[in-house]
Length: 99
Length: 486
Image (cartoon, rainbow over all chains, first blue to last red):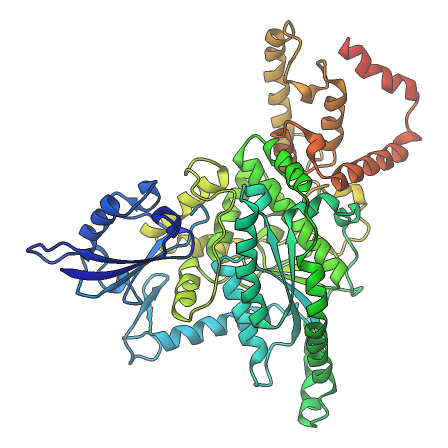
């Protein structure tokens, strides 16, 4: 059971999540550790209230959405390959005009 | 590991591979703002500067940088008198009054924390603007401010500070405290300006009469500029700071080309925009990418309020602006130097003629966007080519619609709707190419705010006066549309 804190912060990304900015999620157990790619799939299936194409595109987030893992750029952590740890804090910030 | 201090752990990658640690990033960010202002010496000490804050990350970041810059004790601290303006566009984007009030309240608490004088302006107020807004004022100083006069102005302040006299400093600080004393009562005036539901309805009608989202955004931008300009003029601000980031300006550059605004690219995306004459618009955030701003705001808790606008949750292909944004952003992920390349190119753009051209007649400026008119029909110009192809394609279309009687070809001046056709034609000749396209997308020109229509009428009559001595026979002129309409 991995406890995560997900924030969709400012820039309008929260509009796609029912205008809730902070989410505490517990990911179901599985044998291999969760990585960001799987997390995105999980978010798309379980948390996105509307317009998934405005958040996720293909395998990764839509261009223009920044991802911070524990307040550090996810590019430094390996982007999609990063393996999630317990109590990780993931923040999605949208820099786009159109939400 | 950090590229600058080489010791701390990195938290952020900027551009194509520079990794910074938290402390170095903060320094870098703050330094860039001051360097931008220092490099382009247009803001003089003691000047009143209006900060246009939309609540979004870039303008909120700009606000915090201004606070940061004004608060330092170093002798090189920024010295100007800031004010804040926020434009509530909820009337155009379809928000309810409660939502708008909530957003305004949130922003007000942010503004109050800065202790700067602030103005909350509703977009509905655009309906009651005076037509003087559309006139370019003359600049405050007769000649363009040179580097030496700037240096002299700053030097003047430094020695007196050493002497502990602090008279010039005192005047700046006095002005600030005076303003904040006033702010309590004037804030009342700024905030509780009455907007009636009729105003909101009129505004909604205006935007509903615009057919395409592209034109809606363009019109919104124009009206917003007018409101800011009017506030700046009436409240005595000589400079306006806009929070356009590098990424936004790169997108704006490309979409402006697609909108037909190629002639005014330099002023639309450059650091300073002198088109209004007495009020100069500057863009100090133009060196920051959206990523840098978003990270800074997040890491250092800069308050910003997200307010959904006209284009929130819009499809990628909804408007030219949206499409360009999606294009640039996508390209940027694979080629991280996209935005900076566009930005460098825009830096090389300069206006051909000096902006202080007081000899240009009023009629040589576009009615809406106040840029120089670019629609002189020169031989073999691209504009002439578009006109010719427009005429050719309409001639074929007229064969079909002449029987119906309700043709939409109002631009040619034919058809049953003579009066609105005339006003379309009248307005078009006063606009630049791109504003003409925006107007073309509007179904009801009388929904435009009064100040635009009356200024258009005034310019038309002025033009008529100027050419009246050359007209042989006035009756002959008026007979022609009647002949065509029968």
